[in-house]
Image 1 (cartoon, helix red, strand yellow):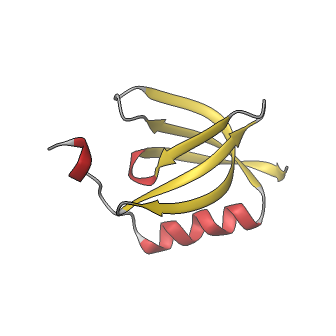
Image 2 (image 1 turned 60 degrees about the vertical axis):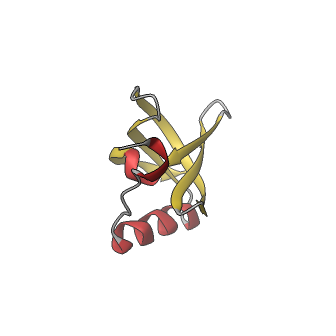
Length: 85
């Protein structure tokens, strides 16, 4: 399947959890896979959700201030870190 049409929509309940995490300024330990197939594990604070060309993305910031754009169907695991930003 090509990169352009392999998006798998996520569950609406999970999307709502992501929205709540943004409103509550949660910090997460997140494992995801990028478009090249590389695995990433970082501590992130989600900041926004957007849909572009039929695909959903999460924008997040690392503790050092680097910005990330992660396709939602590539998120493998999230662990909430106690406390807020």
